[in-house]
Image (cartoon, rainbow, N blue to C red; front, side, top):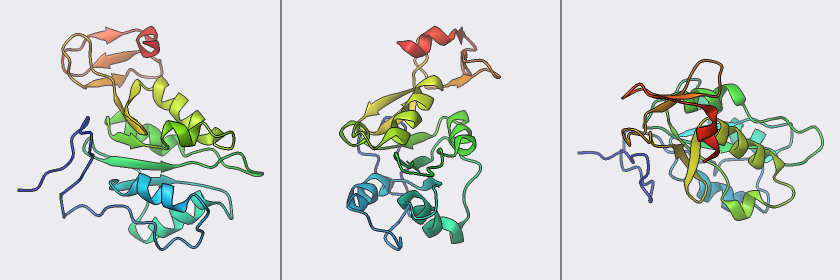
Length: 182
């Protein structure tokens, strides 16, 4: 029997051999931070990467092109996100695809705090801000999951329409956007 890592698993080890894990080793660009990025994505089964020409994010996206860039996700997905830093001509992270992953409460992997707090990593900090607005919290360094419903303790919160409000899809209780700030 295979085991897919569940939300909140500290190890995030995905032992399901039917799921292809992200491998960026064929990337044509290997910056001094390549090993950090390889470590970040090693337990991910999906990758969201978009970047300007010559960026690591662009190179990582190209390593995944033959597999097809996912537009839709499921709750069991562990989604690594590659975001450009403060470089000339930088492109914002793919908000559409990150939002799609958030809508199904997928686990999102980004840089650990010590990496994203470097002055250059403005894109990573913007991604984290976006995840917080979607109701996500950092459950371990660099690992973001949807907050638990304070009413039923289920991780079934989701955004309600175009508002910043959240609603539990299990108990149907609504929470105003102030809950996101806790």
